[in-house]
Image (cartoon, rainbow, N blue to C red; front, side, top):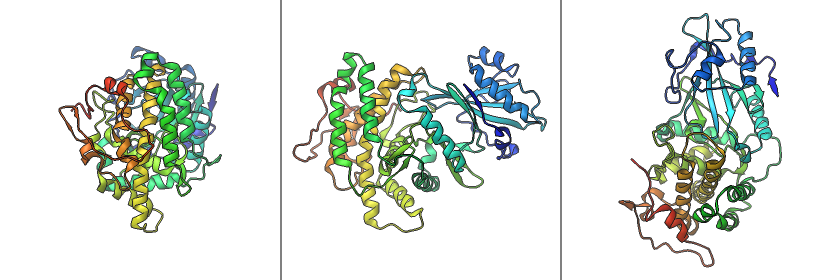
Length: 431
């Protein structure tokens, strides 16, 4: 199935070509010597960047409509780093304007990743976002991917998330995203998704891994979290659910951000989406070990409070201190659900995804952080300092002792099999 969006070539030019901002961090190679520019298929195959024939058909159709493209067949394919669900490529052609070029983005769906979400729903979300002016335009679809408009802005880096002004922009854009009236049932998706993923993780895993990752206990953990966190006063919004730095683009001229990649988007508690964003500050997917997480980089209480205040203030009304503190507390609890979510995702991805990423090790760290933070997050009525607490300290990889109290009747503690899986202590980074 090939779908070419009529008029897509003209619509894809809304950003002036000569205002290009090179995303140096995400581009593997962006010089003329990097990837051959002969014929599209020949150049791709020589470097094993093989696009489906349907994608090539759409790309050629697009380039044909652009009068200033020198040669529609002489496209350059540039793989973008940092993607863990799909393979993403920047496609560019030389133009008659000298150094300028025409660009689009090709997204090839990861094999087996349909288990995580409904692709048809995701495409509808993408189209809604495009029509709402929230993201890139859809230029064409094929069986296992799509062609998108290239946004002339730079993808954020891990360090950008710590910049106070950039963080405030993200907070305001997140609030705008949450308030979108996305068509469809406005019901929480989180808990059903977690249960579906656990079922799939157990189906794919060996008995040894089911035991090692305590997969048979996760249904109970999910029910515990759902009972603890579900409440009538929670704010439900349309959430991105994967707001890591690679899914945020910054136009430095207009000081505006754009959120991209909506595969996991759904209605959820907004506290979950904010928690996901905070958890992602422990990651840097553009290193030699992109799967390693460093939770000493989790935002401290001042950073978290500043973000939440900016989020609540973006509608124009100043939030009360109690509103800020309540959302902060909800976020810390939903961080647990987020660790479970991406831990289970890592177990499944290890079996279904062929992208070069150590999903198993990533899953271990997310589960590890869940068990490490569960007691304090569910027992405390005050926002936790997280990376500054005694519980989070570590010395030569050995687990620090804690004396945290818990509510009667709650299942707590770290299963013995997980201690064996993770080793003697909790590692935070490999720096």
